[in-house]
Image 1 (tube, rainbow, N blue to C red):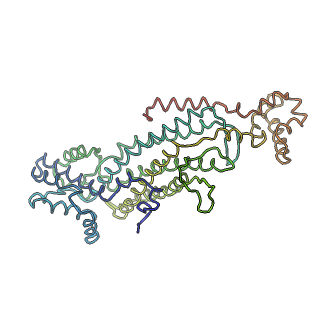
Image 2 (cartoon, rainbow, N blue to C red):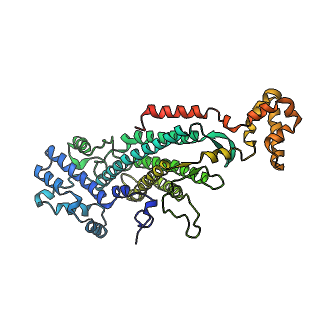
Image 3 (cartoon, helix red, strand yellow):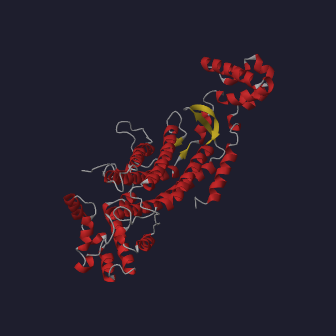
Length: 454
C-alpha cells in the first residue's frame, strides 16, 4: 500500500513526475551523502589530512550500487540515527585501515544539509528548463493572439474588452519574474555546510577553511560565510519561491478551467484520445488536467508555511525543526516539478476559441461598452453628468431587457449630445481594447531582450 500521494501508483502522476521522484528518491538522497563523503575524503587527502589510499577507496566504494538501501533504512530505524548506518555500509566495504577515515570531521547535519542542496540543485536545473518552456509557449500565445479581442472580467463578471494576447502576456511577464527570482537566489541557496557540531569547524582542524573551499568546489557549491544550521532562511526562501510559482501556475490553470465552462467556451485544455470525463456522462470533456494543477497549487502553500515555521531554531541546532524540513522541502520540490511539467503540456496544446471570444463580447447587448459611451458623452455634457446619465440608462436597460443601443437612443439627452453613427462606432467592442496590442509588443520585446527564454 502506498504511504502517500507521491508514490501512490494510481494517482502519483497528478502530484509530481518520474523525473522528480528520482531526484528525491531514497537512492539519490543516499548517493548525495556519499558524494559529500567522497569529495571530503579526496580534499582531505590533497591536504595531507588522511591517507591517499583511504580517500581513493572511500570514493570508489561510496556508490549507491554497492549498498542495500533497505538494510540501511532498517538500521536507521534500529539505532535511531539518520546517517550512521549509511556510513557504516561503506566503511564495511573498505579495508579496515581505510574505512576508519570516512566521515573524518563532519557532523551529521553537514552531510544531510549539503546532500539536500545537491538534490535541490538537480531539481533546479529542471525547473529552469520547464519555466523557459512555459515561457516560450506563453510568448507564442501572446504573439499569435495579440489582436484577438475577448471579454475582460473583473469581480468575475464582464467589464471591458481586452485581447487574449494581453492576458497571455501578463502570464508571460509573471513567469519571467519567477525565472529571475530562481536565478537570483542561486548564490544564496546553493551553498554547502561543513561546520561541525556547533558551527565552529573545530573538528576539521587548522586547515578547515581551505578544506571547506576545496570541498565545495568539488561539489559545485558555494561557501557559506558562517554556519547556517541554525539559520534556515536559504531553504525557506527556496520553498517560498516554489510556492509563488505554484500559485501562478494554479492561477493560470484556474483561468483556463473557468474559461472552459460550456457557457463561456473560450479556452480548452488539450484533449487526448481515450480521455474519459465521467463514468456516467459520456459526453463530458472535463478540464481535469487543470484541476490537478489547481489542487496541487493549494497544497504547496502549506509546505511553505511549514518551512517558515522551521526557521525558528533552538540554539545551534534543532532536530524538531530540521525534521519538519525533511517533509516540507522534498514535497514542495516534487509538487513544483509536477505542476511545471503539467502546465507545459497544457499550454503547448491549448485550444483557443476565437469565434466564441468574439461572440461573448456581445453577450451583454452592448453594455460592455458603457465606459466608452460615457467618455464620448463626457466631451459634450461633462464627465460626472455623463456617468450619471449612462448609469441611469444602463440600469433601466438591464432591468427591462433592452439592448444598450436602444436604451441610449431612447433618451433625448443622448440623442441631443451625439449622433447615431457616432454611437454605433462607440459600441464596437473590437475597437476598444486600448493599448493592449502595443503592451503585448512591449512585453514580448522585454522577454526577448532579457534572454530568459533562450
